[in-house]
Image 1: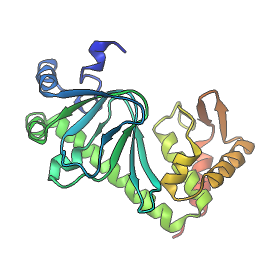
Image 2 (image 1 turned 90 degrees about the vertical axis):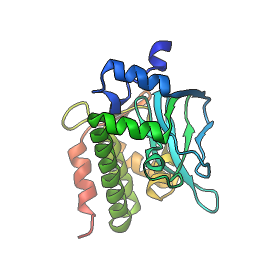
Image 3 (image 1 turned 60 degrees about the vertical axis):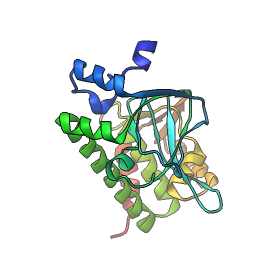
Image 4 (image 1 turned 90 degrees about the horizontal axis):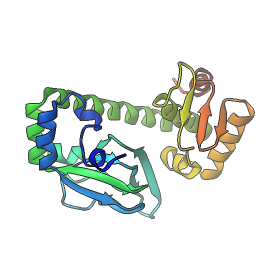
Length: 232
């Protein structure tokens, strides 16, 4: 990635239909910052309500329990947006965000973000679609916690990851390979349980590791395994 691309909003998915001249004006209004790996980008306790756009790198959305246990919600990368909830309603942040790699972000103030939504209907529609997606995932995870055992929650989380990384109708390639402790955090189980599940799936030929990539070889079968144990 060139320096010009790193400090451009052109690769932000939400802005894919924004004209170049409008995008250039938005870029001038942005703040820009590069974070080191493991550096905190958003503190849930902060007063900031800015919206963030990742132009390069990867970050993790997390919260922490009262005992300090990390609860991971999602990993996000190039083209992603976060922090929009606080900008929309003015309420406190809902989560912390930490850089996983060296990560460059652009930021817009709530006022500037509201103006973009008013001036660019395509951005407003993209935002609504993103929020609808977040709600659907949240509903699915609530259902999983209520109706599935630990093993099947791992199947369901793996299936969610695979759906966003299809290479054909029934296979997916997940890069980098998911870390067991991260999946355990998302589905409220232990790292050891996740390791056992991955071992079982490997023996059945449903997943295969190739270097830093996890290949899901049969998404239909994985879906069946989730549904077999889902309650009514």
